[in-house]
Image (tube, rainbow, N blue to C red):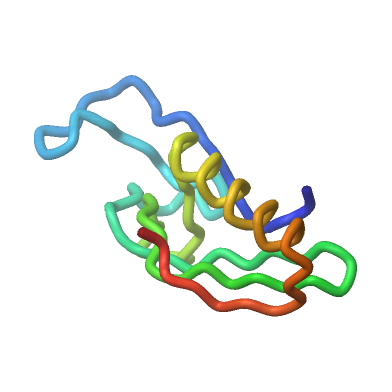
Length: 94
């Protein structure tokens, strides 16, 4: 399904707070931090926006990276909406 979801493994160097360390793959200027983002999906005429998605966000360029389990849940929500025949939706991630 086409959509704006990026999944990226975190690099192996440890960070005291989270145990993870990741430099933004887009700007390569900053370490990503825990935050929230919105994810937009489009399939044909269907559009879905999911707000308050947990992600690692770059404080420099605002690129967001979601973990694999979050991406799976997002895709399931989008597939359910498409199967139900809904054309537009805005939901909160839970």
